[in-house]
Image (cartoon, rainbow, N blue to C red):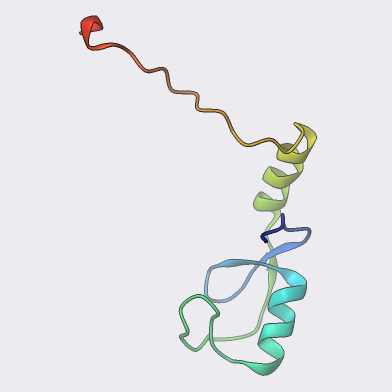
Length: 77
């Protein structure tokens, strides 16, 4: 089961993780959980952009996004 991040952060591998989960990971490992390549450091930076997007999504009810593209029939062309 996947959950919505509460405190997203960016690790030195460039990927975003839930802070608690990646903190536990880097306690024991020096490699990225995504790439399995050694991470240059264990610095974690808050991902404010992702947190803002999650907050906006939650304020809209947390629903699955709707498809905004309109399909046109071949006769239209």
